[in-house]
Image 1 (cartoon, helix red, strand yellow):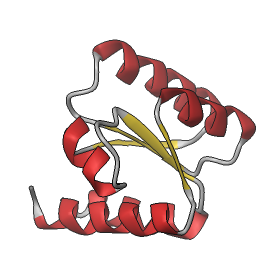
Image 2 (cartoon, rainbow, N blue to C red; image 1 turned 90 degrees about the vertical axis):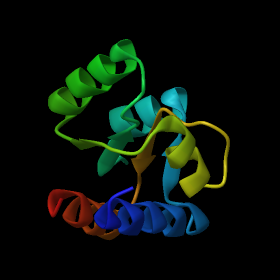
Image 3 (cartoon, rainbow, N blue to C red; image 1 turned 135 degrees about the vertical axis):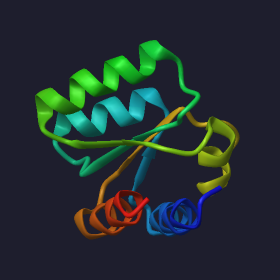
Length: 104
């Protein structure tokens, strides 16, 4: 795992503790459609269907989308099992995570 990915993963963990993460496909989709998602993260090994679905949805609702970590690493970052996707529900945390990922 790249250093910036580690930092981004720990920021995701922090977001989870703050109650600012919607994880899993259903909750992520709901957050995007309700306008509460500031950043959507899909796992690099998520299915093509999942990736495509969120690419289209995020483009339509103008939500930033990043793809990093595996499903296992993404899940571990938020203290759960596997997670193919999650949404960050806080603008500042989303910006901080996005910044880490853009510096790769």
